[in-house]
Length: 351
Image 1 (spheres, one colour):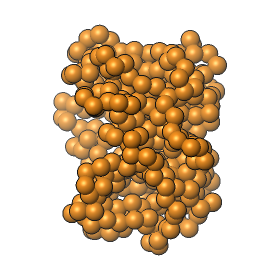
Image 2 (spheres, rainbow, N blue to C red):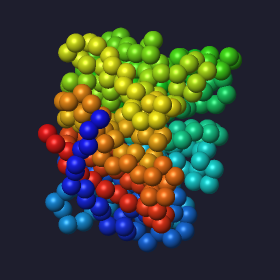
Image 3 (tube, rainbow, N blue to C red):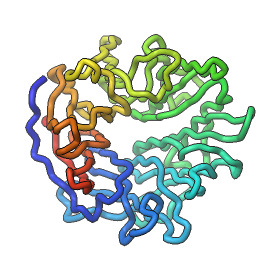
């Protein structure tokens, strides 16, 4: 592993209070943080922001209502706008979820989908977006009729939502969608809940031919959380059937030209090699959420090695890193300073 020296920039502290989500879009960063002026129920009174390097300051895309705010869950964006999910049950986190599209900052949100009024005990849907499509997953129904759904819509035809999969949750769960052109990648877990067992894998559907059978990847590796581009598909793998499919695992790369798979234990402590989840992939580098929050590493696809950006005292006396996201050559990440203040930073990566 070698060092990766970067010029790192930090956004003003007023925009990084109570950050919950950070996403790089390659040419700009979007994130969820406390709404302007929020001083009570900050975890509920949220705003979606954007910032492009070179601009003077961040811009507000959407702010939750000041009365009975509906917390923002998951976010996505592209040159065609922004998508996010939220939930109405702000006190219990258990009521109806919704999925929204915002064409540009300040535009009126368009609701694409919503969950049931029934007690659902579910977080908001995962969302993904590019310049052509918005996709999401979510739960619907209750009891034995509860299903997990995968949906997609063309941005040019927002009223024509496609349901690509609907599976009883006792049999399977679909989650964590990602887009690469017309490719829709997602995680699917076969469930044997009577025995508390799960068998995850990654699948891909072609949105240009949605009725075609999906391509399956990593079934034998317990694959999940795919991050695709034209060169690779990055995912996490590992574990045993008794594990929760969303547990962290080994950083894993599928090289599309050779159809080969590499599992990459993260260097460091012997027990810390399989602590990766929610990878993202840019033009050259891979980022991921790391259970070891004192380290900020990336994987270099060109040099085939891990690169260290920064490593803090593991006792957290120097702070921690939280979410990390890369697209194109733009890295964004947030964390905590030793005094308990949050920060949001960004850097351009080598080409």
